[in-house]
Length: 213
Image (tube, rainbow, N blue to C red; front, side):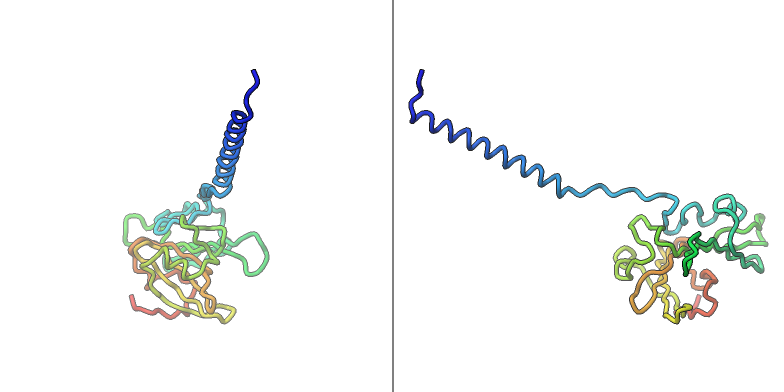
């Protein structure tokens, strides 16, 4: 049976419209797939900074005798009167080398006088907080995540730059920010809610406290 021309034309138009619609739907699907945000990758716990808790394999409150098993022998130790500051340096010999510094204290008047981890500090950008803050982050970005941030002290580093220490006391984390760019150069973890102005990591004996303990 031969179809009349006036019947064939609507069929052609219908087929063309369906093909255009299908192409449009496919293009929209492809575009959505292209702009879809990938799921964030979970951070390696070895390089995770948890405010108020610890850095990597070491936690606040950990017995000092467990540090060697977790990190190996320290590269440097400064100890006196039941207090000790231990350093583990990065393997990269480029200067300045990154480090992990751990401060321990012993309570000789207690039933357990062994040294206990009180504070930890890291300078390597490989270590990050759950909100992706690491050394190299700006002060303005840090403030977005830690609204309780307050200035604690300041000192002058070896490059004659002014460095300010900001502490988020409720969360248990402090940040050392170097001027004039206000870039983060070190992160310190301590006990949550602890005022560390009196016993901040003794890395900077010449620092000036902005408030007295």
